[in-house]
Image 1 (cartoon, one colour):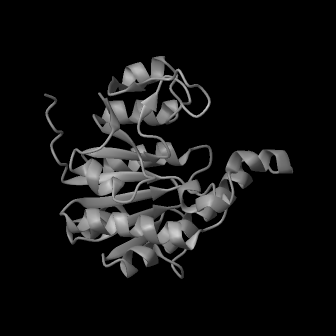
Image 2 (cartoon, helix red, strand yellow):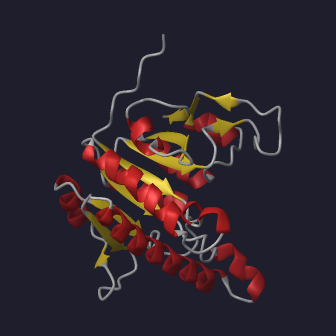
Length: 240
């Protein structure tokens, strides 16, 4: 019988912007935001310290800007602003769900939210706040996946939880290929060598160097985050 994973003390959740868009596919969906916030609050109440890196693809994806006449730096800057909008929305929704939360931005905008600083973020986590990190790394040319691996490493997280629409890492896209099979466990080196697309190569490499376990799971079901932290449900574990 497979042994349940040990519950981590502190985790970082990578949440895509698209996950907040719900069925409408863009912007913020109120019901989806409320349900995700309730799941996050439930997990926080079970004693796990939670940081979240949120994407901005529900508002703007940096690479899309290249087709609109923008250069990469300008396009990525607009994408970073989208992540801050999502961080502020999540902060409010999580607090309404009953857990204290704090949005922080790697791009300073103090009239809207707190600027990111590692020591301050660690203080919030140790005091039971869910910390939502917007602004990516604060630099262009880095994805929010890479930003999530970076923040997970510097905030001393035991796991990086990649919340997706499927229940793990597959040999191919299971929505397009019926023969795709799911991995229970992988190493970072295997994920890079097999060019698995669930995260970009830079994120896998950074997580490997930091000794971080990546857990890929589906956020689609209510209570999914709390369940995966208890070692329940289906997920793929990507280990150093």
